Image 1 (cartoon, helix red, strand yellow):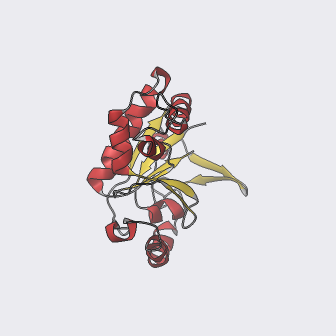
Image 2 (tube, rainbow, N blue to C red):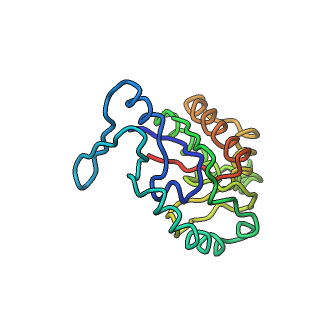
Image 3 (cartoon, rainbow, N blue to C red):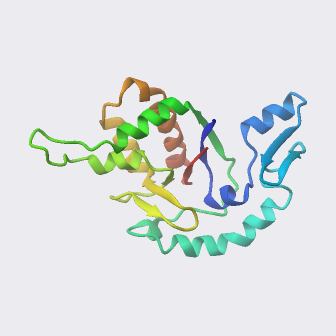
Length: 196
């Protein structure tokens, strides 16, 4: 199973308005790129987005509704929205599945003090376990219900946790991949989505 960290607007992700490195690699090698789904197998001709030829049009039609959903999110998120219309080239980071599993497990593990109380900084670790990272700062990770059902974390808080915490050796490769993807998210001011 492949896991990618995808740095792009949520609207592009939802409708499939992107071309992955695996797609480009297949086409450059002269191999057709095929997608196997519930309706069977379909081949994507070179240059066609993952979501098919109508993906850009579908994206334009959903942005308004998506932004309205985002304005309903908790905390400071609605005041810090990114540009969902951005046409910046998406960025992709491949992560080792076993290392990523170790990272998420370590991030979800409670931090206990000597006396058994929750230690300061535990919330930051939960941001690391998110599957959607927003390029804004908010204290508590939360479950987003729409437009995607995802544990949602702050790009900034997750980066802080990656820097301040010790991670198991088995999680270090994933921590490095996640850090690179989150830096892209922060610098390009678009979300980062864990896609598997």
